[in-house]
Image (cartoon, rainbow, N blue to C red; front, side, top):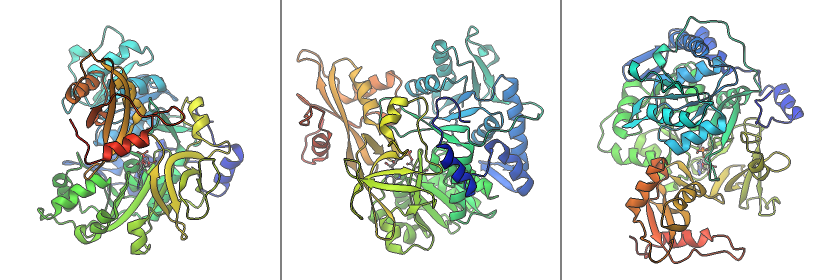
Length: 551
Ligand code: J2J
């Protein structure tokens, strides 16, 4: 049974995935103990000077799970998890799985707008935070949000907090993670077909959506990708991007590496300085980055004498990889390139170890599962001729059937027979490889971060002096795309806020920094399509015009 508000796979489809051995009745909460039995004293996690063995990890997960139960966390509870790349992220996620609670993975860059929405949408009873991180006080944010959301009972804090701050007039308990500890106790197993956790959608709508991932579907995804890459106990994975990103968490990422007995090294940030040092010190064999990070590393490589010879595979995905950049990976970094096209919603395509060099540079490879179904359709929803470009639709054993608590959106985002409309434009080569050709969804992909235009527009409209707003991507050599906002002022007498004031106003509203427009331009009116919708194609072309004057 899946949590209320989720869309299960149809019964026969689920039965088929079980019969064919794709879904094996997994429980993510039971994994650390199983891994400890298999890999014991081998190193599971490395972070700074801390090294944690498989046995220690399982012990910590058991103790923390008991601690969460003692703090009132119950099976089915949703808990917003907002921690950086630290061992506590992994421990807390698995402890929550163990306790039957469902973590909602959020980004550390998220602020009050995003966190309030995630807490509200998920009905979260808890919120796990670092404390003060990169100058931002997450505990204060938790208190502020809890004041308006009675369901939110506890803020769990990784850093030590002052006892005096212990409670907020009874509204919310602030509990240090150190106190989330208890003697291990038997806890009920999870239903493998139930939600294990929620990933955040890259989104096309004004408010972000939640993606339910089940125990069985995620165990299948991570196992399949780990097998495809032949991971084993000698594998060392460097988590460069935020761990809560599906790419880092499970493609094969943290979960796939641990399931293979390898070692996960947590990088504090993606800089070449830090990551090259970690690759050298830990003899890293595999890592995954977005194209912007790959570009940064290539630029730094000639100035670094770090030994990167252990690195076998660099996975690059999350945004379009220019063939020119792709071609530099093997010669300049001395490792194999693997292109990855993926989405938190499910479908993953990847190039394979034996693929010919041309296709590795120019395609995003094949779906990772034989059971992935992929269709390329035209605007009417009809299949395009072989090799043609159209919207990519997909369904399969690890692709969602519906967003959480979003019936109206689901009616548009899925076909009647359960295919997810990705909003990506793609074609398939005669050899069956996917080529991403563009997208029809209203999203900006800025250095791998996904920004829903509608979300930024809604916030811009709430800023005084703005009557209309349209956000489009503008190409950028370093980030791939940047955020360009076209604005219409409210009336002639009103002052048009300049970009810095706009950004400040959006930050003031509590929008995450990565969603702030990089450029803003005032226009007398926004162009419309014959159907009366804002013509974003015209705007995107205008934004990309190098001759355009910019303020
Ligand atoms: C072009 N666009 C791409 C690619 C994703 C592995 C890798 C990436 C993600 C991810 C992920 C792309 N070329 N190679 O979850 O597990 C764009 C598409 C897609 C959207 C999904 C993973 N790889 N994209 O990026 O949920 O537009 O997942 O629909 O963040 O990123 O974004 P997200």
